[in-house]
Amino acid sequence: GENVEQHPSTLSVQEGDSAVIKCTYSDSASNYFPWYKQELGKRPQLIIDIRSNVGEKKDQRIAVTLNKTAKHFSLHITETQPEDSAVYFCAASQDTGRRALTFGSGTRLQVQP
Amino acid sequence: DTGVSQDPRHKITKRGQNVTFRCDPISEHNRLYWYRQTLGQGPEFLTYFQNEAQLEKSRLLSDRFSAERPKGSFSTLEIQRTEQGDSAMYLCASSFLQGEQYFGPGTRLTVT
Image 1 (cartoon, one colour):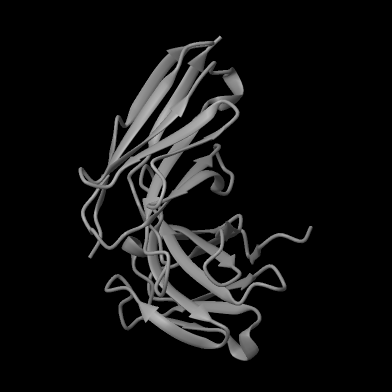
Image 2: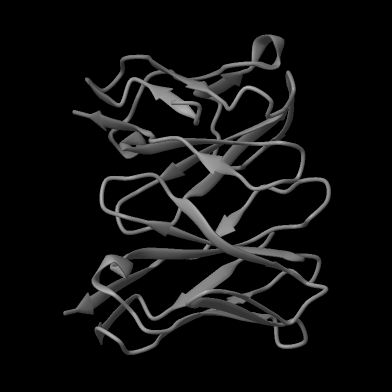
């Protein structure tokens, strides 16, 4: 089955700096890679996703890059703000059929004002 | 609120008791997923339904766990003879076919 590794487990940055979170996956059949943000005590919420037919996707201050050959994908947050502080999870699945998500173990991002 | 809802939000039970959780998906969503999340970890897939059919069960889902989705609407997850290792947040998510999965607020289970 799929296995997703996520690094780092914690990340502290100063407000305005960039943050990068990296994930690797094992199943070459995976072709859908969402990122979820989970604030303390709240439900995971999708912030951005990418499919394997593109290498990069951007939405305002958030971008995701995908390297299918190396089986890794990354989340980039620019101009971080205190409200970006949360736990971020990467996930992988197949875009057809099963679609159950395999999650990484999470990165706790703290943005210091 | 038209999002995914779960009931109860918190459940404390004694070891050996049975518990049942309910998930109400977004109304037009035909897929419903159950995940389990323990502290400091990402959600782990348990099972999913397309309409009323249970299409896949994870190896994590022991025979003490059973899930149903009668009529393809709400779903229930039952845990029989609970163990302390069952303590976790149980998350439900729904999607329309292979679209984005929207998560519910979860049911936090504590087994004493």
